[in-house]
Length: 68
Image (cartoon, rainbow, N blue to C red; front, side, top):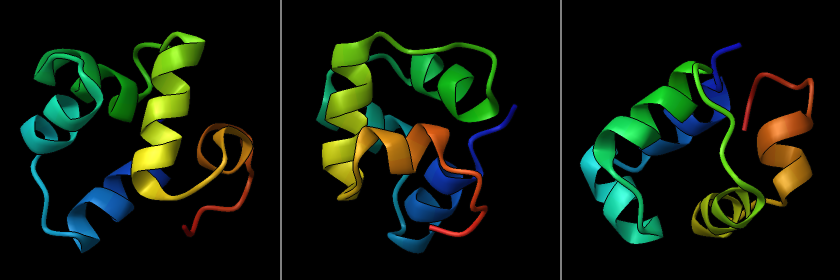
């Protein structure tokens, strides 16, 4: 399942996938797979992504709400 929150948050901030990936220490291709729902990140990466976007891990990855 695609992670629309990550996509929307990234786009609203005018960021590229590469910029987010670098900020959390993963490759752009890994980030793209996470955003598309093709890969589930490790817990430490989930924490870094949630912190980057200013949300909890639950809000970013497990909430049913489609809007950030």
